[in-house]
Image (cartoon, rainbow, N blue to C red; front, side, top):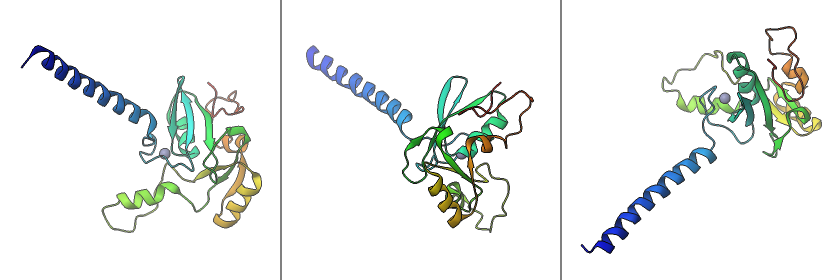
Length: 178
Ligand SMILES: [Zn+2]
């Protein structure tokens, strides 16, 4: 085969390969991956963004952010939560939270995964009691009226996390400070 065609073919293959790698990288960055705390998909209605060690990542819900804070020896900062109704980002300190409602977004996925077909006993679930965020107090209150649970603000929610040191203070948007 003439050299120019060989060159073009090789370049095409290399380019295609590069495109594939770039596409894969983009996909990895943009598709909501699974939550590393509970290993379930990240829901648009309950997504939370946290920062650990200067790295931001998304988890499926505020509950998982709190669980992670208890698991990790490093401080976990809550950067962003999601309005359950509009699926828009909210600053954690501006949101109202409904904790312990009957709605657990992670659950349906879990039932799908269950292969034993047995009525599963309710065991400890990382996503429970569920915590969802709302932009307005009235919306949080009406959700709680329909589905159970209590309406909390960030500071009240963060008080639940047992802190190792008495000096740790839940500040604005901070799950725990070192
Ligand atoms: Zn999770």
